Image (cartoon, rainbow, N blue to C red; front, side):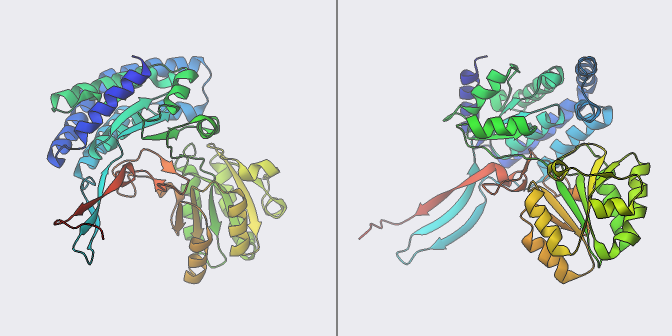
Length: 414
């Protein structure tokens, strides 16, 4: 289907979605979840086709993991839809209300954005996450996945559209762009007047392409060059547990820790042990001079390492003199995603939280918690590293805007 026609159908569906009752949307979400569960075998079969092709094309391990679906992951996709169904409906929420001296009643009310387009890479679970969040927030979704996941995304989208129609919701609320050529993505970026928000979920080349060419509004789902700073006042056992989780629980995702900063006063006590545990798990450590002096087997970091999101079993390590040097390092090299401080000193924690420029800042917790489901959003469409209009995990409220409603009784302006 021609992209402009697809977008027009999405806009028509969006006008209907915006007025759907919460109960109708919730029932539809449950139907979507049931449909995914029932179609699990067909979805996994399609995914096997994509995986075979990806292996033949030499796709690296971390991307293969993102592409792979299992019965548990399909169940998780369905569970995400059910979780979204239980969340409060943001549409119609009164943000604030007030009355002017002339008697005008004014209120700010949440409304859907309209048509949300998402360009994403080899993550089939994004297909259902976007569909569910857009449906609940009253938006139509245009999905453009990668060629690597085309068979999987096609089956998942077909299942979702059939379930929508069965639930009395316009099936064009969810549409997949099956043209995976770069030109199609570029055309989607330029559908001004048809697409209200574009969200990229991909690497630096995609993000740069959108920054340079998009004429529609967009929110950047940027790199995750995340840092963990272990302060002089840290509980070292707690710090080790958090560092290992932040790096090892899944090293191929954007909320994994990529850099470890350690206060010089505790570096000799802390760093050799945690480094040994990381290396035993297969992590290649790249450190500054002081870190390399403390850890046998650590290689010297290059200047480029400090700015790199590895998405792999690699971690940069630096010894810093205090929290201010840690903050300066993050300001110079961080991507604005997530930072964490491990400390028992409240004032130091407050200083770190207040000074870090990132969308999410953790105190005594793993960076891996930066996630829509973990934050109670049910799911997420992406993770915004910019300042407008959303920051951090993009959930239901981030998929709405507002209008100002004014009710009077014959008032005219003098």
